[in-house]
Length: 182
Image 1: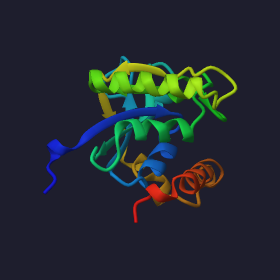
Image 2 (image 1 turned 135 degrees about the vertical axis):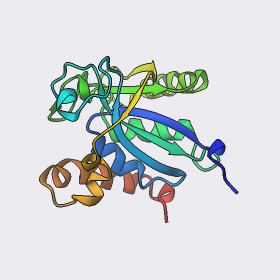
Image 3 (image 1 turned 135 degrees about the horizontal axis):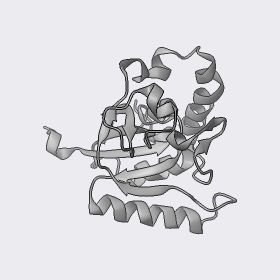
Image 4 (image 1 turned 45 degrees about the horizontal axis):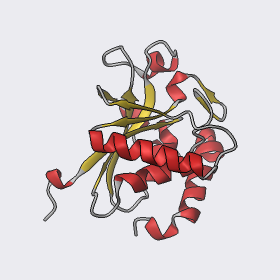
């Protein structure tokens, strides 16, 4: 029987949390994905405050996963395949510090793996520009408002979901078909 101690947590920022949540929800070994905020200075920020760019927070997902099924390194490999880590404070049309690329590590081992994956992706020259993904220790995670949770699943016909989220999910599913939940 699997216990909570058998699980690990990853906290990632790669633009809009709706996109990341929708992708990781489909990945085998992922137990749960919670949209939220991290990396800022204001306690208990609201979505409106984070969107103002004044709190310092990024939109993040907190992923609880079973490392016997999917490793932290594999989560990061997916992360670098589903967002552009070369654009500072933006993903596509989403602009602001809340949309930055960041890995908020929970342990020294996660930091080491994050730095290794960033170096590998950079050396592979997957992107035409340098990677600007920040790595920082997770100080605090704040769960986003209820209406942000499972947003793509609950709102597939919303225009942003159709134009931005669905193509990312489709790209992920095609590339990682053998890693999808059944």
